[in-house]
Amino acid sequence: MEARRDVFQAIADPTRRAIIGMIAQQPVNVNAIAEQFEVSRQAISLHLKILSECGLLNIKQQGRERYCEARLEKLNEVHEWVEQYHKLWTSRLKALKSFVEQEELQSRTQTTKRKNK
Amino acid sequence: MEARRDVFQAIADPTRRAIIGMIAQQPVNVNAIAEQFEVSRQAISLHLKILSECGLLNIKQQGRERYCEARLEKLNEVHEWVEQYHKLWTSRLKALKSFVEQEELQSRTQTTKRKNK
DNA sequence: ATAATATGCAATCATTTGCTTGCAAATATA
DNA sequence: TATATTTGCAAGCAAATGATTGCATATTAT
Image (tube, rainbow over the protein chains, first blue to last red):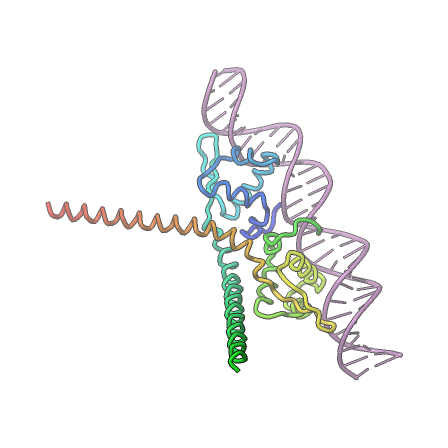
């Protein structure tokens, strides 16, 4: 476990996405996070390490506990990447929609014409 | 190579993101895609298979060529996941900004008061 | 018909991933 | 101080990943 370490990679794992969801609202300490999952504390600890290494979370030590705080801004890279394509596909959908409506309009006009004959 | 096969996993790989970028505007055939990368055609073929298995691209056979067409709508799952956090972090930024402005305003008022004494 | 082109499939391989278990260190509580 | 709690680190392991090479198949051009 020692190579690519970027945000896309980090959120590829469903457990890590769940962790982000769990700490998005307020910081949670390591054990509290681990308790929510079936896997061992160590496994979660490793996920936290990965998330922290790519900046998606900060760890604040408080006594013997460590609170994990989400740094959601770090998702911006993903947001921007997806957003460009989101714009593309929605604009295509819109274009398709107005095309269909145009077609409908035309066929209705023709029907009317036929009726009027 | 045989397990999790979801969109998050698919876009985790930089080569696959590059492929998506390459075919987002119009369909491109397999060899044309492969030529753009350093790795072997087979490696790209595998990436295409993964992308196709999770619905991110369609393959249209035309004679002996296969054109890969992006299905960007399939990024919607990612878009929605990121969007919820995007809303959260931007609203926090806004709140922070208005808080700072409020503080500034107050300190300026106090300064004025002091001056007026 | 033959050669060239576009592409898939299978075997193989080194790395990376995700996980577990056991042990150590730091802090808090009795 | 002795004990419990919270957490990290390291070793070990099976499975997944990303890549390569060689061979097969279908289509098109000569």
